[in-house]
Length: 318
Image 1 (cartoon, rainbow, N blue to C red):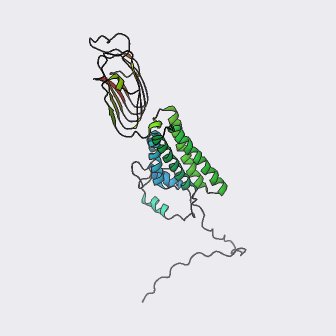
Image 2 (image 1 turned 30 degrees about the vertical axis):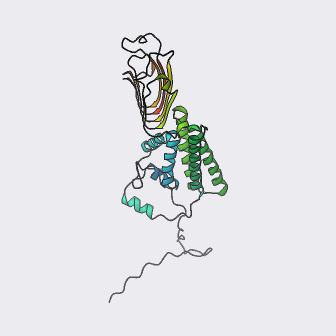
Image 3 (image 1 turned 120 degrees about the vertical axis):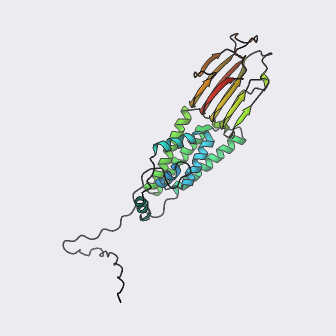
């Protein structure tokens, strides 16, 4: 009968001060913290593009919190979609090499993670939720800069807490990455118009007034397509131009005007195409067509200001 080969004995470490044998070096003890993985999109933990999964692996923050954060920033000011798209383009895809995945699974545990990053992200989401509720149910207009500025303040406090408590580099790196994302979102909110004051308006909306008095001075939508059909507005008794402002955060804007109306229109669009009566220009006076007494008299029946953050703007005649 052949006996089973006994398992190899574990490496022994000499006690402190014990002299090693001549010509030999003492064995090196196992290293402590494992190296942080590179910032890449996850190929295994993904819902859309793997951005949140990659950020979670890099920062140590649960990817679910990153996903909820992107949704909250999108609802708060519309910038979450652009930030996600930029990260999707800038972050390289992760590797699906089985050897790489196995090596990651064999890393030595680095000890308990600091709770500060998770607490900080949770506070950011709570503050964003409170801001959304205040904006929707009160007269307080927080706006995207208010949301993002408050979130940056919370992240800054988290970094200070991480420094005071001696949290590891991974915890601070996660908060720094979150701060960078919020800073980029703040810059976009400053340079591109988003309707942050009306974050409750989510979904497609259509308006079809038939009188000049029924035309609202302002139409706005946070997320979704916005259609304003003014083609049936009665222009016979006008004493001045019908003035309105159209604001959209993310979504297409479509405005339909009477064929006989002279129109003075201004369009400010962040990302997307602009088509004003078949013209790609964004500003100008456009006379109507037909034989109505007000047509082509040089005085506008409609003065419209369009401000869109993300989406196509189309102005046509009915």
